[in-house]
Image (cartoon, rainbow, N blue to C red; front, top):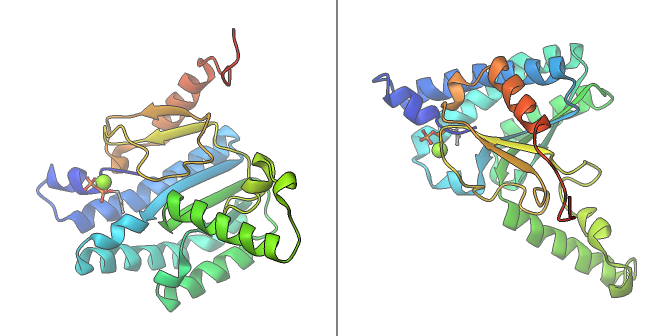
Amino acid sequence: MDGNGRWARARGLPRTVGHNSGAEAVRQAVKGAVACGVEYLTLFGFSSENWKRPAAEIDDLMGLLKLYLRREIEELHQNGVRLQVIGDRARLGRDVVNLIEAGEARTRDNTRLVLTVALSYGARAEIVLAAKRLLEAAGKGDISAEDLNEERFGSFLLTAGMPDPDLLIRTSGEKRISNFLLWQCAYAEFIFVDKHWPDFGIDDLKAAIEEYHGRSRRYGAAE
Ligand code: IPE
Ligand code: MG
C-alpha cells in the first residue's frame, strides 16, 4: 500500500489525510478480496524501515491503526475474515498489541479470508528470526541439517502454514519489493499500478486479478 503521502500532497493536504484515505482503501480491498473469492490477503501496513519517519507521523499511523482495529474487528468477524498480524510486536505500543491480540482472538476461527497485516515487518528480519528459531530447534535436537529443506525452513517463518503469494500488487508507481515477503514471493506475479493507494478500489483489484489470470506461470520450467 504505497502513495498515501503523495496522494495527499497532490491535493495540498497533510500526509495524515492521505493515511486516513488509505485506511478507507483497506476496507475496499478487504471487501473486494472477499467478493473475488481471494483466500489470503496480506497488506504491508508499516515496515521495519518506517520507524525512521518523524515521530508525529508514526503517532498518526498508530492512532489510525488503533481506530481501524477498534472499528473494524466486529465487521471483519461478521464477514468471516480472520485477522492476523506479522512483524516485530516488541516495537509496537502495548495498547496496539492488546488490540491486535483481541482482534486475532475474536476472528481466529473464521475461514473465508485470512487477512494478514504486516506491521513493523521486514522480510530480512523475518528470515533471520527463522534462522534463530531453527538453531534453537536444532539445539534441542528437533531438527538436523539432513532434515532441512525449503518446506521445513518455511515453517520457521512468520507466514508458517500460509501458501506463498500468487500475486503481489504495489501501488503508486514504485517498482520495488522493499523488504516484503522476500522468501515467499519467489514465484509471485508482480503488478505495479500507477494509482496511489487511496485511489485503489475494488475495480482495480478485479483488474489486477484479471491480468494475473492472463499470466503464464512456469516456475522455471519450459513451456
Ligand atoms: C503508504 O504511503 C503508507 C505507509 C507506508 C505507512 P506512504 O506514506 O509511503 O506514501 P508516500 O510513499 O510518501 O507517497
Ligand atoms: Mg511510500
